[in-house]
Length: 78
Image 1 (cartoon, rainbow, N blue to C red):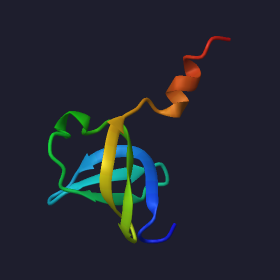
Image 2 (cartoon, rainbow, N blue to C red):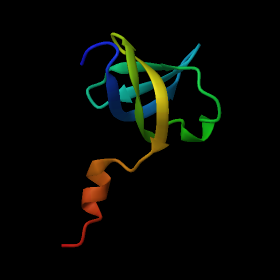
Image 3 (tube, helix red, strand yellow):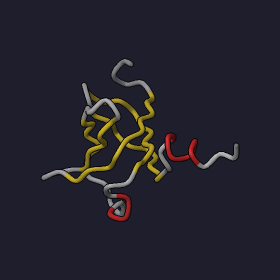
């Protein structure tokens, strides 16, 4: 993905000293900057969409809590 492209990321929302991070499944920490009113999402699985502004930096347009896929699969009827 090129810088300036629209990007979608799923992972765990983590607090940082200066900003928030999304820890992707591969362990990479993505800087999503300072956001207001997301404290209720900390330590939860989220999807983030926005413009990629750096190597592992996103200018967030949208963030929402989601259930991890592996958990949703377990809930499917057999």
